[in-house]
Image (cartoon, rainbow, N blue to C red; front, side):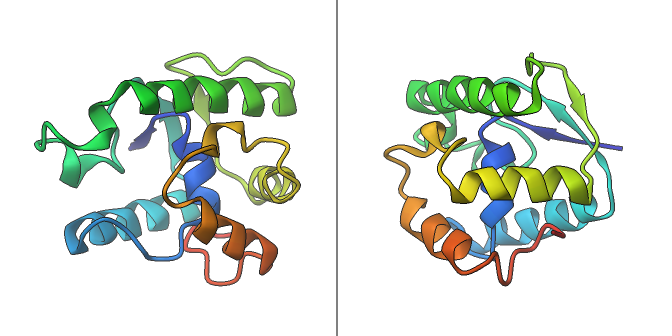
Amino acid sequence: MTVRLRTHHLLCILTYVGKGYSQAFVENYEAISARLSAGEEIELVAGPDDICGPLKTDPEAHCHGESVVERDRAAADAVGRLLGSPLPLGARITPTAALFTRLRKNFSTGEIRTACLGCEWSALCDHVAHGGYLGVRVAP
């Protein structure tokens, strides 16, 4: 199987520690984290993805908003520059320890965090990153 992720979620998975919008959201994210930790391939998609699953039916959910589409663009640009290759929709990425280590290192320095500006979870992500990524659910 493949985990379908919108591009800014490549950043979110780096600091996910079991907190979310609802119990259903957290349970879904935990399952996705386990799949990614097991090395399941990622496919980059537009719009609501597998993480957004429990929120997809709510027309007011932020996953449908233009600001999130802009986060996806910013994340694709930043992560693509870091990896030295564009990240178009449909791109497939194999999650490896080396990839997560590289992304987390650059997340900690702020190099790839332009997509995070204005995000309500940013302070939590700062705390997790500055704490050495303790408790993250996606295997380091």
